[in-house]
Length: 484
Image (cartoon, rainbow, N blue to C red):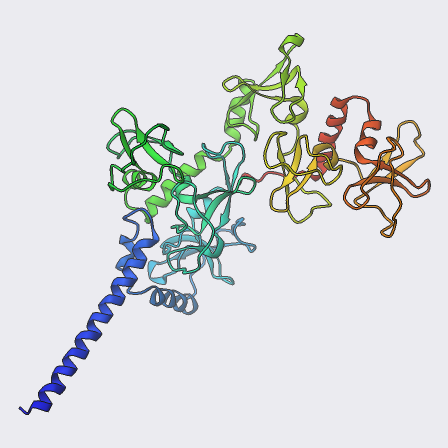
């Protein structure tokens, strides 16, 4: 064989070898990206055998969705909070390759879906509660929402979303639990992990939001993965007796096992349902003379003091009261007026976002848009830095002074004459009124202006009556809590 022909054969062999190496590298890279998706180490095992690359999998799903119409079972529709259309009942096969829009796992069996929007849910995922009350966030309920930008294993879009429990953004589920007031976010699967692990872990483990031994100066090594732990930004499990400490996600993996199958979804659903408020629990508490309030994690008991030496300060408004509701474990007390305040309202002046009740000492402090004052119990929108005192939020649209029933005032959100440059004074206190920033009551016939608080103070001489009237008026703009 001539020398040029040998060189040509060697070049062809080298090109084939390079192409083979490049293909293997691409496959390894795709598998590596797949493994990063799920923090619990075994999550990717069930999926690696199905795909060679993310793009091929998505194309296969889209093709199967278009070409195959799933058979329908006429057993009724489902109205689900995650989709605007009714969801019909389907029976799907694994070969249909239709993924659940909540957990991203291929559906095999009964499902609910919207054929028009290609939106499908496992039957078990459709029963995951919309709202829960988590042990480590007892002040407010957490609402189930879609993850911003859908940060899943097949998405390269970055998001600011980060779970407070594990510190990661990627999730097996495309939904997460969120508190809008506190910017508190939990992966759906992380929210389902209990505060104590006892079944499959090496030692019984308790959940902590940070390392309980604050004076410890040494680096903390996870007893499962032997890597240094971040003691501040993520939760962890710890056993004091055996000095056994581990990452949140690794302890959860040992307890829950392989994640991503139907049994795992059922366990997640059962755990979350236990954190959902239920009427049975409420009836049981009522028999014991106790009630549940959204502002506290423990049941409260009604009390009525007769001795002024036993007077208590309300934890929501800071005012003193003899009667109300108390937690005997924490000494947490709410007076009768604050107990009836709605948690959320929808105000006419701020229609785009709900306003959420905050106590007198909850930071940050915003000035009330109605009266300009800062102190007191308020309804707040943290997104817009908008705040209204409870009495200002409940101010009636029309107001008539008791002493003269014929004189009525209309509530205005700013002075009606835009070009007015004269100083505007309140007809009750003679104090100046910020005509561009504050609410006011105005009588067009008499050309009289009243501060909102001056008008409400004239309505009654008692603070208790004033706030009771506010609580009653706020019911008309109350947002009903949906615990479905």
